[in-house]
Image (cartoon, rainbow over all chains, first blue to last red; front, side, top):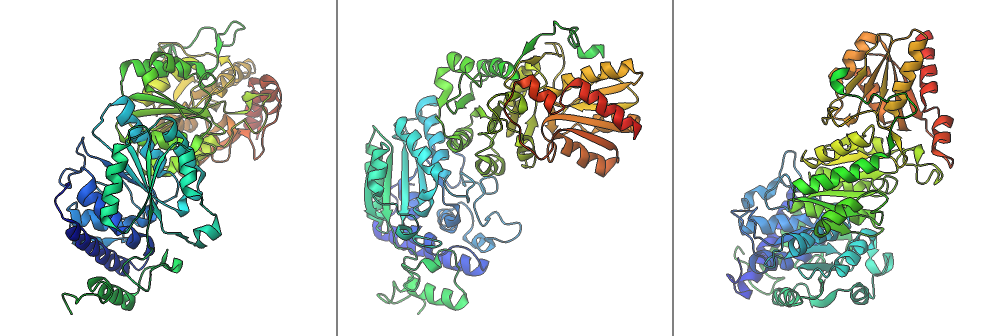
Length: 286
Length: 324
């Protein structure tokens, strides 16, 4: 999939992903808003530029793998997968409904292309490490990469740091962690709840290569992943500073939107803000 | 039961003894010899859990995790996603004791065929005391959808069980003991996941044993025979899926049962039998095991006697059951 879309085209794609997220959350009546919106640029970059994958052949043996560790942000993955052609965009409306393949938290066995089951926090980096270990040392597949997206609140979990030690020890250069550094978690701001800083220093001391980027800048995301793949002596982590609720002004920076969906009025307003880039351009349907 | 080819030394002083974990060590190495997808992960207890045999034979497929049981099973989940058959080992108190949620989400719900090997289970761990005597593991693993639960009766069976779970394609829990225990099966004795075995036929009462407690049931049956009581002894190495047909056929005949396990009876082996009897064939069941309490330090044999998990106590319980 790499290199097909220009940066402006990718930015448009990210807007489409955000619109999908708003619609599906409104329809579901429950779910998380802020995280998925903030992650839309990262997922768009991964699925439409960075990763080697094939929506028509989800089990392709040579594909790159993306492990979503903070499963509550799965609406952004569903939306991006649908936009990429894994399943019809229309199916997004089934989110959280009985019998749906799109469970409230992702389940690998229900949806082709979903690489892991997650929800309870802190175990994605370990699973990604196990995959990267097999690729590097056992099956010897130097052309494959494992990406894992983690939340910052989930870094409170001890399991993450067990994995960080393991990947550092084994110099899993084919493992690229992306931290959604949006500074919010359910009870408030991360630095009030359980401070993570010095976050860069923590990862460096565990033997990781660290980059810090604007996680809502698609070009920066693509560049950082490219840089991470060029580091061959250690695993890489990208601390992606994102704006929670990005693209919908009344949701941005507000932790109250962490675990809340928009109602129909709010969804209408959100879609308008997204289509007009907060009034900067005229929406197609205005 | 000649077709079971049991050891001729059962009940004698020269019965061979070996810890079940030794059989696991041999079985894992053999599984690794024949199947290149088998990998082994350990949490800093490689010799103790007998993974060392596999490590020596297949160092490129052995992964040291350190003292990090949550990482142990989740790394294994990732390796299983890559087509591997991961065996993870630690003491049962730590795995599955500490990492139950990771097993639930990343292995059972995620349907990855990771093998959880919990060594040093039960009070027979001995002097290490209650912290290390895992008693709740059967209950914890049994309630998980997709999980298979196997508790081998001796080291010979443990070797077969290890090879069997390597090939069953499912999340599986293998419960092992630290202390040497009598070997009552032989190389020729059949073992199949999901099967219970009638080791001795009888008509008066059924003694159900799992793990190393089955041997004590055989001893109890000998003692009961001296008093004219014909006890049937059924060995249940697979607690889940339970061999309901074999279990029910026996109690339909005898009408009374005693179950014996080195674990909490609540939710454990006795719990599994009680659920089955309640549903299909109400049967008076005396459950020997741990009753809502922890173990404590002591010599293994001393502790088994203290908690009434030896042949003479089982026989006494059976008699008591027949009198009421």
